[in-house]
Image 1 (cartoon, rainbow, N blue to C red):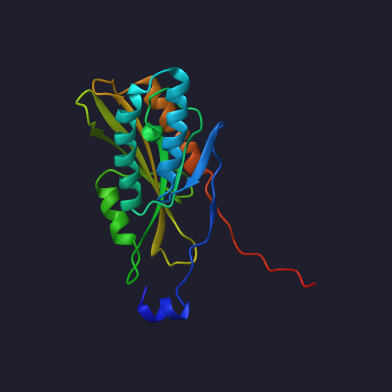
Image 2: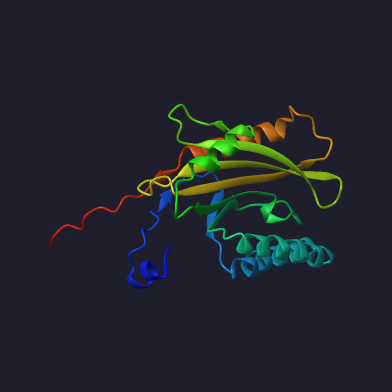
Length: 205
């Protein structure tokens, strides 16, 4: 986006999107205040459970996670509204961000991902995805991630929606781990439901 486009309002806008969520999941816009909201909810849970000792540990983990979200340019976070006591709310979540290439399409970047093992999720070839496992922070767990790339319509493939679903599994979890397989199915289903909201003409009064 050039300065002239930004000042004159000429830059193309990114359309809104819809995505179906599993039962008891909710969406939250990523804002600096979101971490405070999660922290307030968790503190009430710890108080009811008589475990104020968990508050400090949890708060540190949460702040680190929220700083990562804000720093990465995340726009939305989707996660279950009911979590286990003392568990980081982002330990099972999906994050929505956008990437763009103002001067050229993202085709070359996409082809690089395919060469690294990315595959098409749907028969229409609309969604590219790949899965990764990264070491956890404690040496006993690992973070499993599913990444989905969906081109934004009307941008000549210069902008894409990135959905990153994450969860935590044991460091020695087998490849056919039942929990991880179920989470993969949930993330795949969520990404498959993405639709774009096209502006409709306002009827004349």
